[in-house]
Each structure stands twice: as C-alpha cells, then as structure tokens.
Image 1 (cartoon, helix red, strand yellow):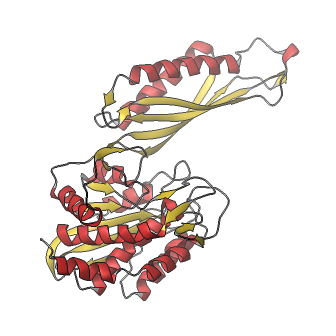
Image 2 (image 1 turned 90 degrees about the vertical axis):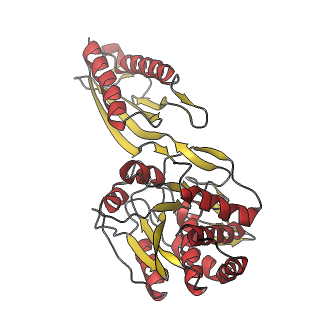
Image 3 (image 1 turned 180 degrees about the vertical axis):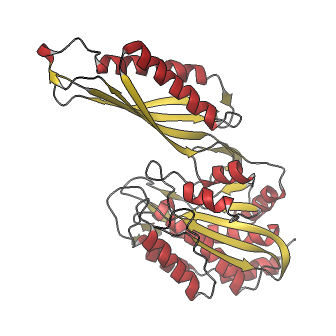
Length: 389
C-alpha cells in the first residue's frame, strides 16, 4: 500500500536512537565466535521477550546455539517481509564495545550485530507507531554464518523448515549499490602427501617431492583460473580459482612429507555448485595419479550464487524507501561477498536485498559502525515494510 507522509513521519519519530544503541552494545559485549553464539542469541531472545514478543528458538539442526525468530503481525493480512541477520563473529580476539563520537566499535559491530539491531529497531518502531497496516514482519537471527567455521547450514535448515518471508532484507555492511547479482563460492584446502617421513634433504628418498607437486598443482589451478575468467558478468566480474596459501616443511633443509594449499573458487549464476566441486576434485585426482602422491581436498561451501529479480515489486518498494530517506535511488551493482541472501535465492527463490549501515573493519580487530547510519537503516527497513507488506 502507499503510505502517507504523516504515516512515514510517525514511524520515523518512533525510531529511538537510545534504544537502538543500547541493544547493539548489549549484543556486542557478548563474545560470539562462529559456532559459539548461544549466549548472544539468548540475549537477543531476552531483549525481544522483554519487548513483549513471543520468541521462537528453532535449532536449525544446531542445538548448541538455537536461533531466534519473532513475528509481528500487522492489522490485516498481507505479505511477510523478513529481516535476517547473523550474530556470530569471525575467530579473532574479542574487542568489547565502545562509543567514539558517531562510531560504535567492537567485535561484530560492523559484521553484523549492530545492523541486526537496526532491523530490530525498525520492527519496534512499526509496533510503537501502530504503522503496519497489512502483512507481517518475520525477524530471524542465527549462528554458523562465517566461513570456514560455519557453512550456513543452520539458516539453510530454517529456510527449509519454513522460516522464510515473501522477501528478505539483510543488514550486512553494503549500501553504495543495490546488489542484483553475486558470485557463489567455496573455500578449499588441499593436502599433498608422500609415503615416507620428513628427512634431511641430503638423505631424501626416491619419492615424489611434495613441494614440486604443489608447484605443479598451483600451475594447473592458475590455468583453470584463466579458463574460468572467460565467463564474466559486467557487474559481478568473472568466475575464478584463487590460490592464497602454500605451506610445506619445517626447516630450510628438510625434505617434507606434506604440502598444503588453500584458496577459493567462485562462480556466477548459471554454474552449479556441484559442477564446480566436481571440476575441482577431478583436477586434484588427475594430479595425484600423475605424480604418485596422495592428495586430499576439503571443500567448504560459502554460499551458492545469487540473482535478484529486478522487476519484483519488492525492489521498487525498497528503492522508494531508500529514495525517501536519501533523495536518490541506489545504483544497480553486484554483491562482492557471499551472504545469507544467496541462500534465500538458491533454496527458496525468494528476493533478498543486502543493505546495511556505513561500517568498516569487518574480519579485523578494528570493526566500526556509524550510529547515525544505523538510525537511517532502521527507518529504511520500517518504510520498506510499510510499502511492501
């Protein structure tokens, strides 16, 4: 439905910066490395329960840290808009929250506890302003997002169990474009082994040189990257095979037993994850046969590829809300990372838009988020819900 200016101003006035900041600080103050987010999810459940919501705790196949889900029903039936965020953080030393001017710092501040709380504040503002005429909000939060410690399976199980709306907003730290396409990807770890034990290089046996095999495999992987580069999208770029690490030996004159390589494989919509997996494993097996080594591979899916149906009415509702707050529309672009929106598209064919606050330092010890922009995000989310639901 079309909202009036009076309705918009009423819900904007209901967004409370003090409440938003306080909730964000509470979550950031709780360490929650991937796989260990139970305490922070419990805290969010308590916050929402204290606000009067009936909190559901689906385990999504991971009872060690049950997820959080709440539903806010509007006055009449309509579409459901889902706000979804992850509360786990990468495995780095914990940094407690602190406020410096307009910045809120601390572990998970940018990725993505504060953004998730902006979505919570949007739901609270809609309730306080009695502004959701039709439809409903489904808010979900979960663990097991960050690769390689998590693989998204908790959210995937929730989606398959029906915890999914008609459209999804995700407050990850991306807001300079409206992302309509994104690559899928997996991380890979390869271990090359020979049969003997490590030994002084002057005593080395007539066994394969695992470093030489590693170099051969790197060359083959880079050749595959060149081949993949021919498949490109003007926004998202090309498919790729990236080699990021190679390790072998313990000292300069040791003939090592193992060589380890790590990297990523990324693909565009239209390429199947299963095909990328099979292609990679075939190259590994071929190298093992040709060199007389044993090569094992550990592949961890980040997410499958992502595509947004631009004519979907949800896109126009979001663009309209964004333009109301900023005075301009977002340019169309690509999503540089894999996030939960990829899962919603791949598993449920549900449109998902990633849009969060100005933030930085993700996956470092110097995370930060703009407090004033968290307020903007809460208003964008609330207005999108009013228009879409």
